[in-house]
Amino acid sequence: MACLLFFAAPVSAQPDDACNNFWYCVSELNPGLVAPEAQLDRETPRATMESLISAARRSDWESAAHLLDLSEIPEEDQAQRGAMLARQLETVISRKTVINWDDIQDRPDALVADGSSDRPQSGEPRKSLLLWTLHLDRYPASVRLNRIKPDDGDPVWVFSRQTVENVPALYELYGPGRFEKMLPPALKTQATFGLMWWEFLGLPFLLALAFAIGRLVWIAVEWLSNRTHQPLTRDILRSIRGPASIGGATFLALVVVSELFVFSGQINTILSPMAWTGVVGSILWLVVNSVEVVLDRFTNFDNTDLTQRQQDHKRMTATRIAAARRAFVVGVILVGGGLILTQTNVFENLGLTILGAAGALTLILGFAARRVLGNIMSSMQIALNQSAQIGDRIVYKDRLCHVERINFTYVQLLDWDGTRLVVPVEEFASTHFENWTMKEPQMLRTIKLKCANEADVDALRDAFDRILTELDAEELGDLDRAFVRVANQDVFGKDVWFALPCADPNTSWDLACEAREKIIAAAAKIAEDRGIDVFPSVTPGEAA
Image (cartoon, rainbow, N blue to C red; front, side, top):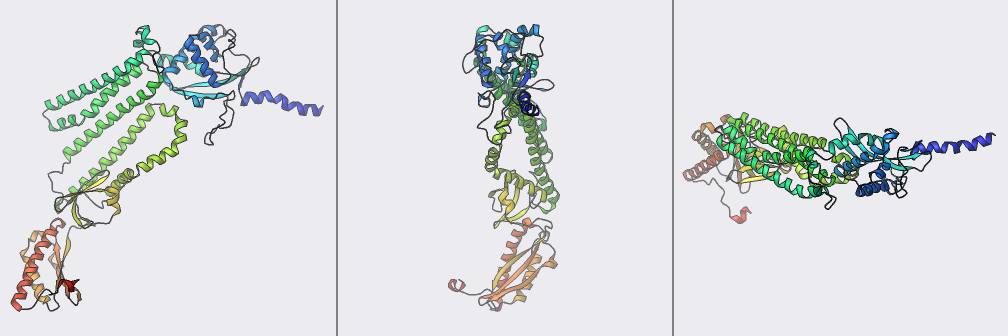
């Protein structure tokens, strides 16, 4: 007896295990409907979807009702309401979803036999399959297939009872709008590519109308900017012409696709996110342009020479404003991306596909944008550590320059001869340079001359002291720091260095050139008066 119980226990547990792992068990499925036709195939998820499409083409909604789990509907109402719910569900699916047929398996257990290890259900039978997710007013609604087995029948795939419960609300939200219902029946027939005639003809008209609205908005804003007498208002209006026109065009498209007409899933899946992207992007673009105009108006340094030593505070302010602009733009981009993702559910429904390719996509985008991202981060780094400020006098790769602008991806340098250097920010931040303005603007310029060994250094020192009194006193620094030293000596002569204290690094080069001219002239006068060579007399071959 014990042996019989031992062998009977696993056998009796098999139905319960099947109900838990392979299908949902019910006593009966849709008892209020007449028996389904033999050709109605519900054995696999793909077969159920194909049966729904075939029934819709024949307008056989009575047969399509067998593809729904009507457990929550009273038995006496299942025949009438089932056909109506099947028609409404097919309308919602055709208009608001893009079914990925590769994810709908054509086998009874819906097992993904060739799936990768990244998919958690790969290699396991499934009894529920999510097709799409649609947003209702308060919560998201799933379009899902369940595998159900009645006590007196084989397991079949039908739309879940939760999906059936949400069909009326989904149809009310995503079904034909009041304007579509007013269209002639001929325009509601199928045209091509799964679209109806009104969609096939209305989409080009919608695009043309959106373009016309955008153009009208541009003209209107331009007209307002020409009529205003306030410079700030005029500049703001001119800066928002682009975002206002794009926003008007995309807002029209968004209203049409969300309130007036409900396009098929092939169009709506692309058009609706694009419209949301245009609306959100244009609003953020408008905000950025307006803020830029206001900042340019109240923090305009174009008429101020930031290279002067008296403008240290303004140099710091200009650099910080440039950094704040970059941070503001980056923040706006992040906020805009977040708003677009929250307002569209395309990525939510295609999430598995995107997640599956996320690693490769991230690598590709990261590799392609690594220089741009690196330049942006480097520009933020320069702005924060203030290694170079707008207006600073620097020596970059043996070029004497002023820092004119620190942009997102490049630094604009003004060379002393008027030419401009455009240097990628990442390269600029990773290359050492001399900053003559940093911390203390006063500096020593060293004038190096090669003099003969018999040259009188004391006479040169006296001449240098006299020259200091002839130079512009406002451009000179602390004269106690001035000195003359013999720094080196060889067979050709000795190196005499003249230390010139300069108050302003921006004029130090010109001041050093002027002092060098006077020193050379004074040395020549000393040589003439004393009959002693001041500079070495060597041939080019000896100098080499």
